[in-house]
Image (cartoon, rainbow, N blue to C red; front, side):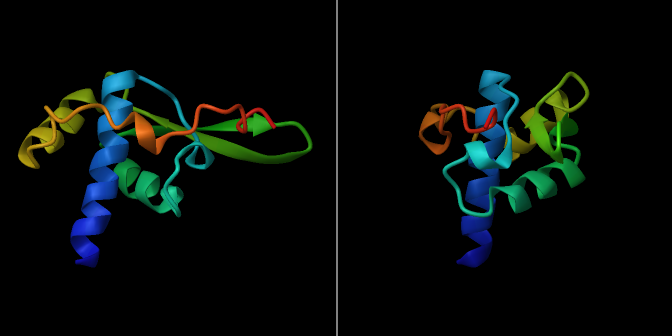
Length: 100
């Protein structure tokens, strides 16, 4: 269903950020409309997002799990039996497009 697909994408994003401590932009995810999932995770206080200014253009947001969201993120992953799945590194692109 649509709902389960959305949840699965949110869980994958959260699990990746939880496991790696990476700070990522929506563009770095190989998930279409990653921004909507990042926004939902931020709204639920499962991740933190901060705006990074860029010269001459709009700022971009990076999302990550910090000390303030870590406990809640872990509880969410446990609740959905997602804490022990392998880190979903396949959903992120490590190219430097965030610099571009």
